[in-house]
Image (cartoon, rainbow, N blue to C red; front, side):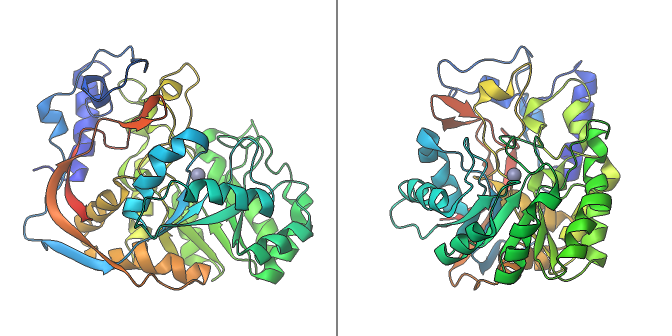
Length: 404
Ligand SMILES: [Zn+2]
């Protein structure tokens, strides 16, 4: 069977050979599970058997991995009816998840976070101990008192979105200096600052947004609040990886499966692939390699955060398609495979189950889980309200399965 690395190479060749089609990304078009009413892509491709046979040169590796139950330190669950579709996926894979607050309107207060939590809990399957860890949305006007209210309610983090940076971030921060009162209170209460680390100045190229944030905005935060715990979310560049490796102990990073798996060729070569569009956007190969090296290094301040971000497929396949990749139901097997292919399976538990809890200052999960070596195929799509959501690696064969 092919390794993940070979799969990526094949994606590029398929695209070139077939005039702008990508079998893997188009797998949902052939799916009998696709619901009525979902819009079809204009790309005519259907997946070839060959292209969907993808992943995992794992001969000689272990047959099972037993390890501390993992957590997802960056998750979008959305709201409303679709909670019924996505909450069980995360609950089946993870014990806890940091739930992002970018709803419309955003979750800006402890009261709103309590209400959102209750709506999520209503969809946690019976018998599951899944725990959503709520975050609040930082704005220019977040008062210090709200930080204290969040602390009293048991919420551990605020999320900083630069205004306009990604999905539902219009209420985000226009100038970090406007948040200094809230940041001071966060530093004093041990509340974490989770950062979407991109500048949104239209003069800055989209591929440089993270680097420029690290060079300009991040030092402003850390110089003024040297004891504030900061998580650089979903890092995508060698600059971010290096900053955490060399940086102070109060700065950590979450890493997504897509930024370990894919570079920007997957998104753009041979035709645009909306299911690989996310923010921060996929970068050059040299950056992907730096992210993989950092995440698999065993360094304690890199940990798992899927940034799983479902969108109805009609909103992905659009003239102005939404950013976000859905990975919750299959992230763990994909991460495990990347670690295995990089000879780092012995460091997987630290990344998935230990480092995040340590940085957040919460106990490790007591439960253990087991990944078994077993081939399975990622579904072409999953139900998502009255549409579908197409997952990362739709149609691909994976070699690890979480035993439930
Ligand atoms: Zn996110």
